[in-house]
Length: 153
Image 1 (cartoon, one colour):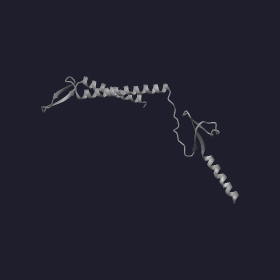
Image 2 (cartoon, one colour):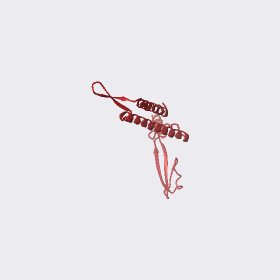
Image 3 (cartoon, helix red, strand yellow):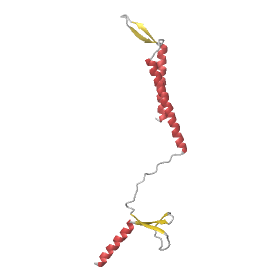
Image 4 (tube, helix red, strand yellow):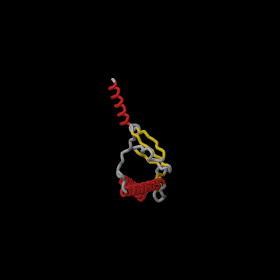
């Protein structure tokens, strides 16, 4: 019976030692802090010794896995692509604005009014105005395609 109790006590002590680790925080008289895995021998250290019991099962952290690091060249390429996308968006916005402006505000030379039998008038677009609108619409389509290419689509 004693032997069983003694064996159980030794097993429990071994498990406790395996689960816990001890560190020592050494603070010398000048305030310098040093950490050690073993206590200094008595009389060899002039300062404060603090025992720190560490349970490694409680002190764990799950760190994110490092991703690929960008090199300077990759960052430069990303900046250039961003600049290209910005320029393409500005070009598209300008093309859409020019088309909308031409559609909403035709000049008197672009549209003439023609009378009808009942006394009303209807707008008739000139060939030059039709060509102008077609070119502006084509400019918008080209700007959209440039933006897609700049974005990598």
